[in-house]
Amino acid sequence: HPEWASDTELQKKNIPYIGELFLGHVRYGTFGKNSIESVHPFLRQNNWMHRNLIVAGNFNMTNVTELFNSLVELGQHPKELADTVTVMEKIGHFLDDEVTDLYFQCKNEGLSKRDASPVIAERLDVKKILKRASKGWDGGYAMAGLFGHGDAFVFRDPAGIRPAYFYEDDEIVVVASERPVIQTAFNVDFDQVKELQPGNALIIKKNGRVSEEEIITPVVKKACSFERIYFSRGSDAEIYQERKDLGKLILPAVLEAIDNDTDNTVFSYIPNTAETSFYGMVEAAQDFLNQRKNDYILKNRSKLTKDSLQALLEVKIRTEKVAIKDAKLRTFITEDSSRDDLVAHVYDVTYGVIKPEDNLVIIDDSIVRGTTLKMSIIKMMDRLKPKSIIIVSSAPQIRYPDCYGIDMAKLEGLVAFRAALELLHERNMSHIIDEVYQKCKKQENLKDAEVVNYVTEIYAPFKAQEISDKIADMLSSTEINAKVKIIFQSIENLHQACPKNLGDWYFTGDYPTPGGNKVVNRAFMNWVEGKNQRAYV
Image (cartoon, rainbow, N blue to C red; front, side, top):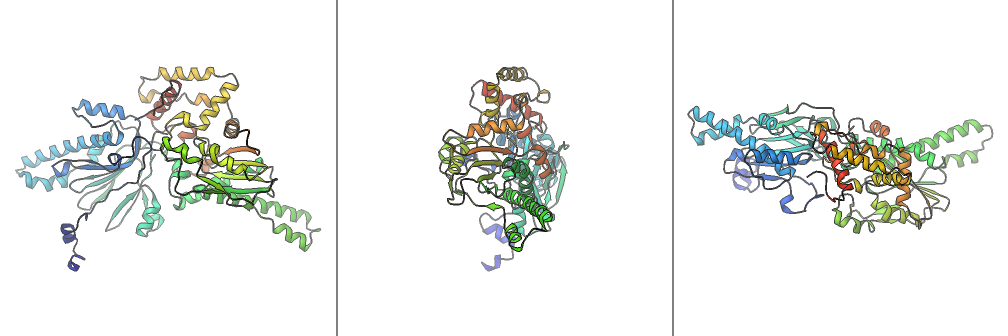
């Protein structure tokens, strides 16, 4: 049917799945089941066109139980206690209200039910629906929704925790959680892709009208820094530079650990997300070496010969691809039940590039559980017989659970938490554990806004380096011959490298919403009480 080629109306009538709105998601399962029922988008069906709603997004709510109960009080019976379903039904409830009000307006104007339908579609106030639905929400979200008649929206939380970007021209509007995918798909420049501002919704009406509207008054922006360190694609121009800066900024601590002995040090990285920070670290190392060469030449210029100068200039920072990873296996995002089985088989090493007198510096993007380091990486690196193994994390110590969309839900899973506990026991300070538990318990029934994060007191007695040293001790073992040291990024360097993404609650305990404090206290109580469950639904 070549006659259809330039006629979009004919295409829509005759070709399946041709439409003007598309909504998809690639979110993986970290909690619950990996089943077809759990796949985004979620659908709220209705025979009335305007009442159909599809929702997908990157989000977790900290107060799902309260939101669920508010729906029950309205007389509803949501099919499950899950944030996606609960949020969808909250929006759906106020969508129904809006459609009903508009129908009666049309009826009073003398319109029939059939004639009222396009008028309802035109008058439907998406901003009003989202404002009413989102009252009381506590969480991080970038969610998209489609209505059955053709309107659409993308809505971002008021702290800007989860990212959202959009591009608009006279033919199309596209929204995604990352900028480079839009740049690649539509061949547009960096500055043509805009960031959806915190608390705002991008509202796209069926008639093509597009507007960015404030739904919730924005609070202090705390965009997730872990997106920049690990989660988001490194092909974004800003993120690429930020990851390089993370590598550059941590080099002084590395130089201190190797006593500035770059001649007997090999720099490498854990594939694949740490590669960019590795480039930054090596660039900074090369700058350090060049400065040292420069100082030597100026000091000894009267004694230098052509050969000795040539030998000096030929000295380079030694870099090798030491760790080799099976690209099909990603342990951080694997379900708990299968993670440990994978880690021992993820990595192999390159032999013949390390000398017995060498320090082996190997950078990773972050250290969450420490499982892969302990069960695989350190053991494999030690087979190369280096003098020392220095593991460098481009991220700070992850001390607290996340409750806004990243799979770090339990305190006991975090190696920094386990290290702090060991230090408390070793120094006869275990009483702090019970004191923190009692403080958390007293807050159980307080309103979210009144809750304080007392779990910070677990870490308060110790310097960051003490915890890092204890982590190194825990992740090593008597069978490891090399001296093992672990270096973490500082909070100050993180903020310097990622100035637009200052959300650092998993490192500092400074949660961007009141619900975060409640979650971290609940996570601590769960650990003390031996409950192997998440602190939020």
